[in-house]
Length: 138
Figure 1 (cartoon, rainbow, N blue to C red):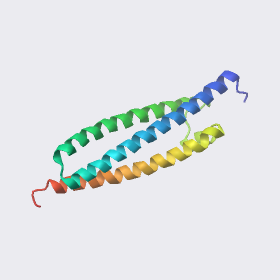
Figure 2: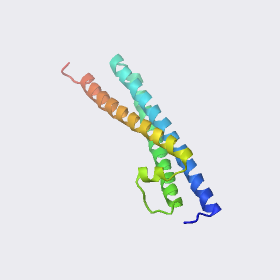
Figure 3: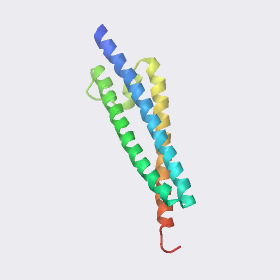
C-alpha cells in the first residue's frame, strides 16, 4: 500500500501526540503515587487536619489522571485510524509505529504499569490503615 505524504504526516503526528500523551499520563500517575505516600505518612502521624487536605488533593489528582487517560485514549484511537485500521491491540499498534516512537512508548507503558501496581498497593494499605485508625476497638 502506498502512503501519500499527507497520510504519512498525519500518522507521524498522531504517533508523536500519543507519545506526548502517554508521558503526561505517566507524570500524573507519579503525582498520584506521591500523594498516596504522603497520605500514608499522615495516617501514621494521625494528623487529621492534613489528612482531610490530602484526601481532597488525591481526589483532584484522580480527576487529572482520568483526563490524561482520556487524552491518551483519544490519541491512541487517532493513531490507529491513521494506520487505516478500525482497532488494534496495543502491541500490534506499537510495532507499526515509527521506530523513534516504539521504544519510548513501550518503556513509558512499562513504567505506568509499575506505578499502577504501586498505587493499588498503597490504596489498599491506606484504606486498611484508615479503618484501623478509626476503629473504636483500639
